[in-house]
Image 1 (cartoon, one colour):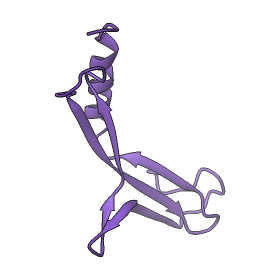
Image 2 (cartoon, rainbow, N blue to C red):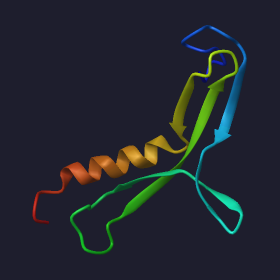
Image 3 (tube, rainbow, N blue to C red):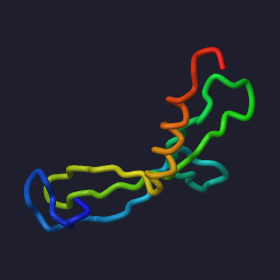
Length: 88
């Protein structure tokens, strides 16, 4: 939907870049965050990388697509995690 057209119904009525709340704290919404650890087996210093989520919503059929704002950061963290051998 980043092309501003719904892939389900073809409508151009798209609401872009909508914040997805995760939970509310002191009356304010915290944004949904995706996390990937570079070293998931570590007890501490896991090298966790984060990226907020955003949604694109079709105003016609209601279809929703979600995207992370920093996909490359998560991809690189995932690649590092794949290089870790079990037990490290």
